[in-house]
Every structure is written in structure tokens, then in C-alpha cells.
Length: 195
Image (cartoon, rainbow, N blue to C red; front, side):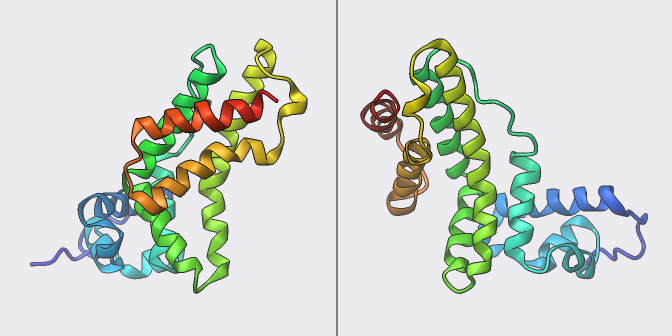
């Protein structure tokens, strides 16, 4: 027998939202984005579909919020390894690990839906902004250690490493081998930032 959300304790506000986002994330892990439905999330969260649709008008928006709430609630500063190379490797490895899981599935889903709805591009920018903040911190540390000069840092040079990582993820599958990450850092990111 299906769970009747009207018979359970009534949750509201943040408690209900957290339950929905956790249920959506758990569904992403179990069935992937392709199997994610508002019905399944509502049942898992013990609430109504109306509660979901009031907050997220589409499953892609729900999926994006679930990933951010669960995996990236506060991305914080990337690890400080003491060197530009070490920090870049740590940052790209963290990004690759995220892309290999539910976050990567959501990125692929948002990309496919943006082909038909350019308004969805804003959701991709949420992912990009987290990465951009990490990269800015890595570069700030490298400048303060004297490894690079501030004039070598440009927006395109900052995004080159992550762009190559995303390129590999999109065209070669969700798992980015560590050898590729090392090549991106050693052959592209460091030379660009050291000029």
C-alpha cells in the first residue's frame, strides 16, 4: 500500500524542503536522472507532488537543487596543498569526482534540456560559479606565494582547466582518468598561468 502523506506528521518550510531534496538526491543515486520522477520523489519524501511543484516547476530544477543541497551546500575553499600545481590537481580531482556521480548526470540533463530551452543555461551557471570560486582561491594563494603574477591571470586562463575537464567528461564519459587531470594541469593550466 502506498504511503498517504496526509496521514503523517505535517512538515513545513525548511524541514519539508530538506526532506524533498534528500529524497530527490537519493532517487538520483538509485535510478539516475532518466528515472527521476516527481511521483517517486514525492512518495519517498512522504509528501504531495503539489509540494514539489510549488517549489520546483520542473524535475531538472529539482535535480539541480538536490545536488547543490546535498553535495555542494558550502563548497568552501579548495584544499591548500602549498603549491599551485597541488592546488590545481586537488581542485580538478574534486570536480572530476563530482562529475562522475549524480552531479554529472544532472549537468548532462541540464545541457540536453538547454538545447530546447535556453533559459536553463542559468542552472549550468550555478555549477560553473562554484568551480570559478575555487579557481579564484587557488590563484589568489599562488599569487601570494609568489608562484605567479597577477597580470598572468585572465578570465579565459582561469576557466581553461575546468573547460578541458568538462570537455572530456561530455565526450568521453563521466569518469575522467587521473592521467587526463595531470595532463590538463601540467600542459595547460600551469603554462597559461605562468606567462
